[in-house]
Image (cartoon, rainbow, N blue to C red; front, side):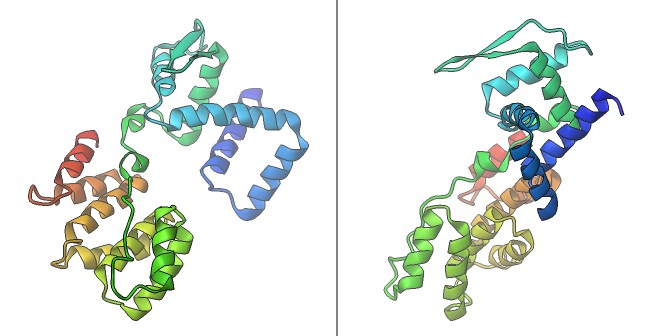
Length: 249
């Protein structure tokens, strides 16, 4: 195995770790190697820093990296680039572009179009919920509200389930539960709830369609996200957001 092959294999492993695709035993082995092998740890941290730059589609550094890779020759013979942000100037050394290109290959992206796709985090901005305005406030209701508003979706899900045992047809609770499920990547259960809500005559019907589009977006199922966003009509409150999403898909 050549050095290039070894680097490629390591980079694929780094991506799998960062994207949480390793099994529990593989993850334990990887983290043990990080603790025991300082050279391996240094290589991983360098890779991780560049990966984060590429992952963040709004990062000005990423735009510079991608543009440079597009224009570079196969040997990555670059002049050092400076990336200017509002607060600082970051020097991006020439050899780092080679790692950046390797990251693209490890992720499985051979053209740069996918990096221009919108991401779930671009649109998933949840308003704080107020469940305690109801007259029958109990401890679970308060806890659900606090957990959701603090983005502790695992706890919020527990409390939503408790509340739904008492009020199984409460669409408001079902809606917020579906959001928590998507945040936790529990897509199948969220789909079932969102289908039911979107087919209702409640104020949450169009909201459910929007959340469904975001669910597909998070799963990188762009075609389905586009189809659902297109089903949101001009009379729906989410129409403008859906149009913004469609313009980027």
